[in-house]
Image (cartoon, rainbow, N blue to C red; front, side, top):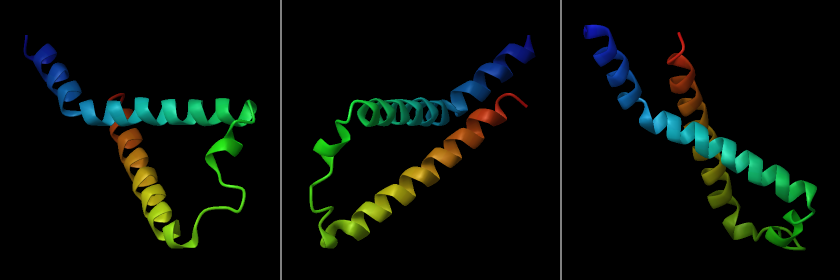
Length: 80
């Protein structure tokens, strides 16, 4: 009876990782749909992003990629 409790606790410890994996799949899916429907032009200004905001965009992308990598590593470690 010890085995199911251990498995349940592994999943409970990795809830954030599972949420990050699901969120990253949703973001990629929305991005693909926006790209295919040519609606991506609505989100990007015609002249490009404002130069003052580029460091914020870069920081956001780096944190998002780092969080996605961490979440996928934790999620895939469940299957080892």
